[in-house]
Length: 166
Image (tube, rainbow, N blue to C red; front, side, top):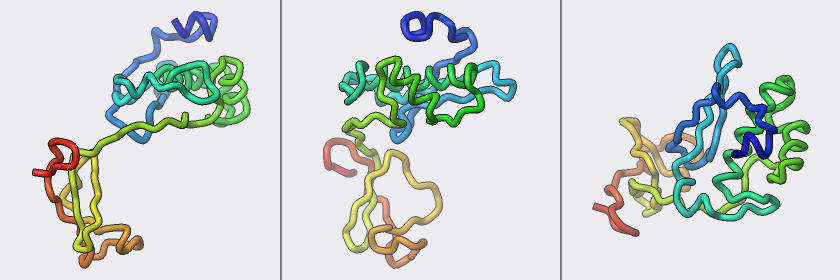
């Protein structure tokens, strides 16, 4: 649909693989193969639900479609203007022409809830989507420079419902 409406059917979608992503800070991405003949577009699963239906300021698209169009403009840029900066003048002008927001990331309040609760000795809490691995991590609010064992974060547990930890 977008290829026909926005790109006059000229994007090589047969060479584009669309994959879901578990990312929450990066809602979309596009990568090329070494030959620059095929593309991999990733869209965050976070946008599958109602979060993707949110309107985007300065755009005619909802958040899900805005991210998809943003990545498709990157695909077009790889083909038509490969020497341009990824979010440079060519990209911004193309986004404006389509009716999408020309900035890198749409502003939207996404309710991202973590799954793992950590607490430091001072009582500061850190909620993360992924568990820390085997490395030890300290509270950045207590000491932002480097790991400090005095401020070591300890796993409280997995969050099973709003505010609860096992």
